[in-house]
Length: 115
Image 1: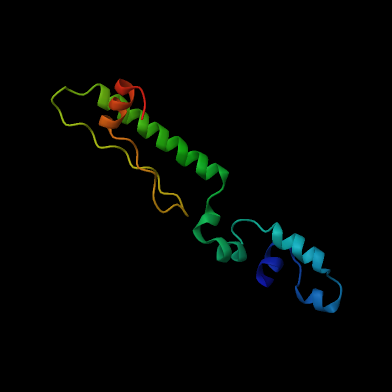
Image 2: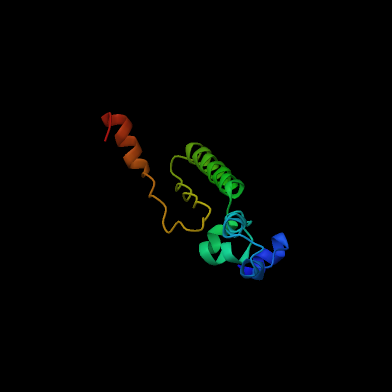
């Protein structure tokens, strides 16, 4: 934390002990440290690398892959093996993905009218 305060704000943590830096200011500065700060990385691990932009880009990649897979599956030769289902982009902090429905489960849903 001390190194982060010096790096990002030019604030010496010893100023707190000298009485020239309030506890409130230390709290505010620490709460607003950027994602690449050592303290943030220590507390949140690799999830600190992922912000909203990274999650949105991963979602776009996943959706494009799913769309391409659906197109390839729908336009394949009737007797050809179906293409392998795309794997989602790995995201930090998410251990496993929810398993997707199989083609048979999807067909049963539409034919049978529900789960």
